Amino acid sequence: MVKGPASFDQGLFLMHLHKGKEYFEQNQFQKAREELEAAYHLRPQDEKVLNMLGMTYFKLEMLPQAEEMYTVLTANNPDVYTLQSNLGLIRLKLDKLEKAEDSLNRAL
Image (cartoon, rainbow, N blue to C red; front, top):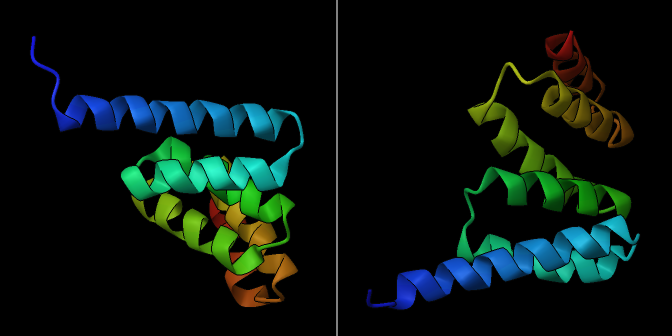
């Protein structure tokens, strides 16, 4: 089996994703951000990366970036209540009350 750029990309992506998750679990959010952003650069539509990066941005008080990640996630998964509630909480902290209410109602 010949390994080309796609397989290298997959391995590199998984390395960044797993390191990011480990740093997140250790409450090392800045390091988690760096790893997850590298994974995001390789696979910007990967839902695991979007979720982890959104949570990391939230922990780092980077709320507009967190909102961006969860907006994409909820657009692709409108019936997943945890994603809607996370987006609602982010919007509440951003003082976007009508949008927060809408997201939280969708979580019900």
